[in-house]
Image 1: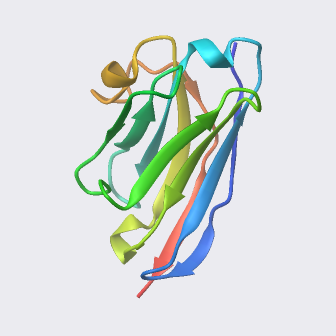
Image 2 (image 1 turned 180 degrees about the vertical axis):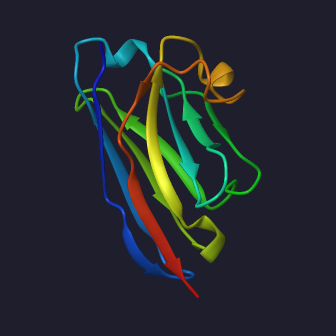
Length: 126
């Protein structure tokens, strides 16, 4: 069982930056892929970024590529999402996710991902 707790959300102006953190419980963190998804009001949850268990492979959605960076610290059981050049359309609840599959399969969608945090709200004002 993996429990995930996100933090770091908040209100920021367009063009600003935020760093989200996700703390994971359990002794198997270094063997699981991690990711970030988001859900805006009235929209479906969408893939943002994923990272392999060792941190060497990452994937990004086209909408955030070049602006967001996912990373992890396996010694701290934590995954991060550094968000720069934020836009109003980045406003959403951001969810941390974990899977015993690969970082690539996590990008296919959220249906098969077993572990989720409760989310942290990011609001970008124009």
